[in-house]
Length: 255
Length: 246
Image (spheres, chains in turn green, cyan):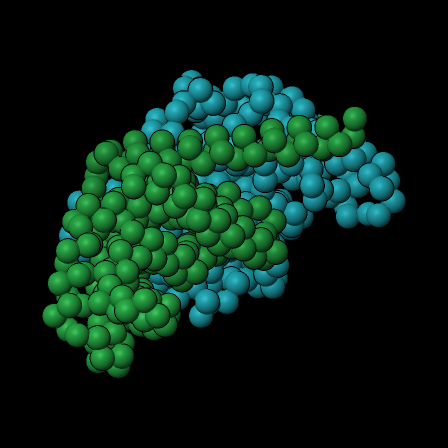
């Protein structure tokens, strides 16, 4: 009986949390369309989420492309299929690794920071202070962050893909000596525009979900410094695992 | 005028307010006293809609704010200023941006004009020339004064102070008390102050109300409070360990 009670309790608290997340999303959606529109704050967040993550994403994409080329070459060389290394790198990056790795890196750098910042604002009453200054904190703090995630994660994904192709090209053609024409022709033949497009669609969903989770965990932080630490950890863990789970279902739907 | 009618509030199983009734007169300073954990801050937060009661009404000029939605509440809040216990300054902003926040967000005033108003507001609290500092560079007393300047710039009809002098030295406490008196008189605002400081209470209050176990157990002007025969109130204002409150 005790076990069932415990399972029921967890299930109810899960549903409650899910409901709160959707409610926050809905309120953010409504506030997004409510004037006045302060674009400055959205641009500030876009810079934080996008521009300031670009070096990290460049390195992630570049080295992922490089290692993919290296590993694939080791495998397919036995069958004399080195010419397909570029295509395999291109497909892997566009469909999976570009959006997933970008989302995970943005989670590590940005979502953690969002949860910690909003959590600190909550426990030091700065969020309450916003209410008392007749400013809705969802419009002021959360709408710009989610909007920035929605716009910048797809852009970073494109950047990550490009860096990955370059890394693959460099290792495949320059280091391993694969014929350049074959490498490029096979890549262009096998990687279709829909692969790129579907990968970017995934990135849009990831961008929304991870920033929403970071904002949610930070915004509803309770319990001082320990609470902020807990919220930050939970935000990163939940956002990362959600990316992995959503990736499967989105792939099943799209490809 | 603020009329609080039969406010009840619980957090999970803990009953914090248990039928609070109080009348806050217009233009007067009402001080809420009570022991730590007696629900004073929760009560204060009800007045500005930061907490919704489980039951009861809060009438501000006969308008019940407990039934308003977020957007309507924001309209009402434009008439309020609130000074938090730990000032609650935005730590990513300078003093100037903190104090000018309301004007930047809710008016179309020119930057220059906002800067002048901020400077004036900071002068009122004796803190000119701190505009470019960040909250982390200020002392506790200075933070509270910036918090007061941030609330005053809205020219509010009602100002709420949550333990404005807790943790400050006696001189700074007196400075803040004088500031509360002066600014409330200057703009003719209604003030509700939550406080522990006995000297402060009798210095600034037009009316004192004591909150105990979720209810107002005594209220009146300072003379009436001094003369009250309520044992709990007397123990509190004389600061004795022995008495009905242990």
